[in-house]
Image 1 (cartoon, helix red, strand yellow):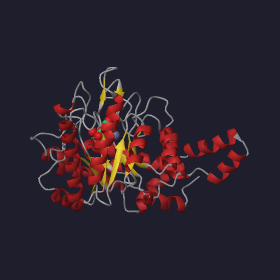
Image 2 (spheres, helix red, strand yellow):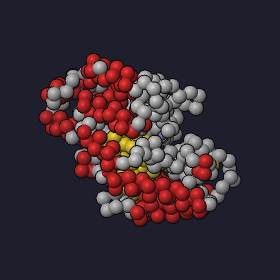
Image 3 (cartoon, protein in one colour):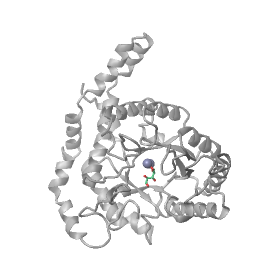
Length: 388
Ligand code: AOS
Ligand code: ZN
Ligand code: ZN
C-alpha cells in the first residue's frame, strides 16, 4: 500500500502544536537535569519551536504557559513568532504552583482563593486578546489526598461557578478547553478526573467549552480511542494533549510506548471527521524531554503523529464496513493490521522532499549547526525549566 493523492492531500493540512515547556529543562521530583542550549526566555523557546516547523512543516504553532511564558509585551512575542515563521497557540493557565492553591484553586472553599484563580484566568484571556490566540486550556491540580478531607460534592458546585465566571469573560471566537486527569498531584480524588466530568462541566457552560483529552491521563488499560469516538460523536472534543506513558503521566514522546494505540486513536479521529482542520480539534503535544535532546525529541514526536495518521488513513474503510457487516471478525481486524504494519516512512520522506524539506529532519537538524549555536549563545543566565 502506498499513500494515494487523496491521503497526501489530507496530510498536507495536518498541524500539530508544540508546547513551549518542552524546550525548557524538566525532570522528576528526584532531579531536573540541565542541558546546554536550553532557552532562558520565552523568546528563545519560540525560536526553538520554530526549528521543528522549519524542518517538518508540521508544527505551525506553539502553546504558551502563563506564568512561565509571561513577557512584558505579548505583541513582541507574537511578532517574534511570526518572524520565525510560526504563530502563538493555546494559552495554558497555571493554578498548581502557588502556595495559596495547596487545598485547591477554582474549587477552594475560600472565596478569596477562588477569586485569585479566576483572576489568573482573566489574565490569560487578556493574553489571548493581546496575541490573537483563541484557545484557553485549563488543567486543574485540584483534589484531595484523604477520604473525608473535603466535601467532594460542594467542590463540584464551586468548580461549576468558577468556570462559569471565566466562561463569561471569553470573547466571541474564544474557546475554553477543560482537561481531565485521573490522579496526581492529588492521590485520593481529583476534581476533574475523567472525560465524563469534563463533559458535564463543558456541556453546562455552552458551545465555547470543550474537553481536552491528554493521552497520559487515564488508568492503565483504558480504551482511549473509545473516548475519542464518544467525544467526537457528542461534538465535545476540543483538543488532544499527545504524549505516551508506560506507567502514569510519564509525558514521554508520543507513540513511544504504544504506536498501535496512537494509530487506533488517529483512526477514530479520521472516522469522526476530526482530521479536517475545520473540525476545530487541536492536536497538541504535552511532553517533557527529561534526558533526551529537546528539539530532536519534538521533531521525532510530530513525525510520529504524521506516520500514525498516514497509516490510519490507509485503512480501507469500504472493505472494513463490508467485513464488519458480514460479521467477519478476523477479516475486519486484518484490515486494521494491514494498515498499521505498512511502512509509510519512504512515502513521507518523499512528501517532505517535494515540499523542499529534508527527507530526514532529525539528521538535517544535527547538520544545521543550530544546536551548537544555541549552546554557545545561551551559556550563562538562568535556563528555563518546566516549573519556572
Ligand atoms: C498536567 O498533568 C497536564 O497534562 C497539563 O496539560 C499541564 O498543564 C501541562 O503538563 C503543562 O504544565
Ligand atoms: Zn496535558
Ligand atoms: Zn499531564
